[in-house]
Length: 269
Image 1 (tube, helix red, strand yellow):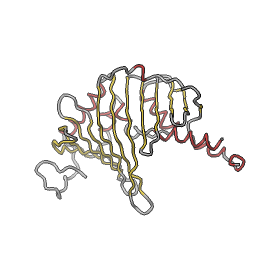
Image 2: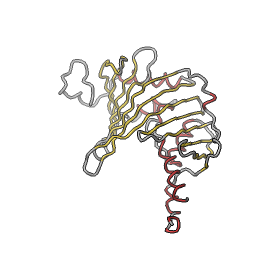
Image 3: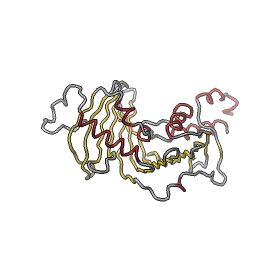
C-alpha cells in the first residue's frame, strides 16, 4: 500500500505540465541563415503587445496540445505530450485540466488558499496550503511540489519584463499562417534556449504556437505547444475554480524525493 501511495503521489505531481526550424523571413531563401544576433524593435513590440494583452485580462482560458522530446541514450528523440485546458482568474485562481497521450487525466486547482490536484481515474487527490497570488502559487508548486511548469510565465503580469530581460537576440520573421490564422512570427534567444512564437495579428494578440529549443541540453530537445482556442471572457469561471473531493476519494501526499527514503524491503512485501 505504501508503494502504491508513493507511485500515485508521484503521478499527481508530474501529471501537470504547463507551466519555448525557423520560418524563413520575408525575402530570404530557405537555406540562408536568419542573421547575426540582434534585438529588433519590431519583434519586441509584437511580443510586448501580446504580453500586455494577457496581463490586462482579468480572466482568460485556453485549450492547447503540447509535445516534448525525450532524448534517448542513443540520441534518438521520442515525443511525448498531451492536451490541457487552462482557466485563469486574477489575482489568485487557476484551473488546469490535462490529459496525457497515454490517457491519464488530471485536474489542478489553485483557489487562493490551497493547491489541489486530482486524478479522477484513480480517485485520489493531494492538497497543500498556499495563500497568495498566482506567481507565489506557481513558485511554490515548482519548488516544493515538483510540478513542472515550462509555460508558467504566460500567467505572470510581468511576462514581458521577465522574458525580455534575458534576451540575447529577438528577430521579427514576418507574417505567416498557422491553422488558418495570420500570425506574427518571432524568434528570440537567451543564453540557454531559443524561443519561437506565432502571435495572432490584429486586436487580439494571443499565442497560436510556441516552440522552445533547449540548446544546453543533450540533443537539444524541443517543447512545442499549439494553442487551439482562446476565451478572454470565459463563462461560468467561478464554479470551475473550486474543488471538493469526490465521494470515496483517497487523499495522498504530493510526491517528494524524500518519500523514496521511506521505502524498504518490508514495504515491498
